[in-house]
Image 1 (cartoon, rainbow, N blue to C red):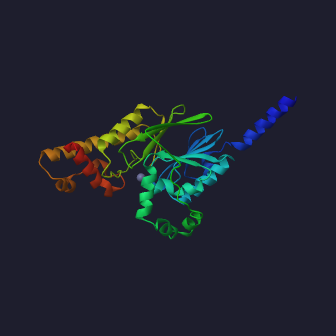
Image 2: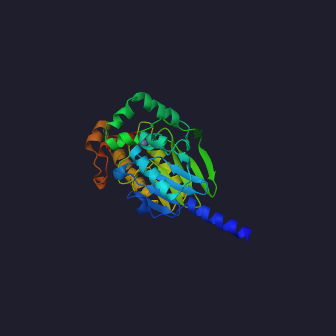
Image 3: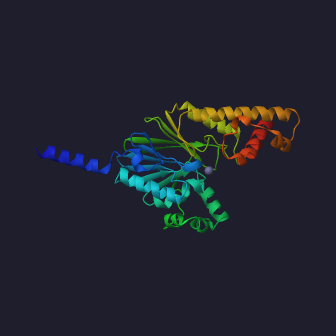
Length: 304
Ligand SMILES: [Zn+2]
């Protein structure tokens, strides 16, 4: 009798710890992708945040685009569980994925790929008044920034890392040369859920910085497609399937083809920038990033 009573008590306690909540009760930006796995989908290509429940607490993937998002995410987590956020995995070090870390850490331990701290610190040096400026955006933003602290990663891994949190296993994989100095894909193999970072975006031109190469992006897309994920959650854009990779592969193939043709016609980079048309992608957002895409394609074609 005594054993049964304590078992029932344990059942009640565990019920109190993790609640079954429908995504719509968490707020309009939440999607439930699997049991215990939610995504806070950024509005208008703002960054996504993954919320993964475990029996040992919450694991977050990025911390929301702005601190206002981070606060909304924290409120939702409180509806889901009374357990803390144990780990926060950065898919990239850029401020639209990391400014809200202070909302969760401490107690969350922040994990990123090697180079993430230096990337974050150099941006802080470049714009020391960034947070002050952000506070002027709206009273809500000012309130959300209350208690702001700069939180670089506690742990920086190299190439690969496995994080076991009770019943879940997170495989962290470095994606070289795809977007930032430290991009990480997070793979939950048992669940078939992949967080694919900003290697490819959805219905949007990606920003291709000088150290980003199209062959690296295509290699990362191929590697991630090879994992055979059921659900793909990009760093920005609506979660989907491997079609997200296929759409990008098609786009880059067409871009490389057209730029290659123009290079063979003897055209200069500036001429190509002026003349190249990609009408198939008129519907894509962030057109100001097209020149950076053409530069990367030009380099790839020239073999540089
Ligand atoms: Zn970024």
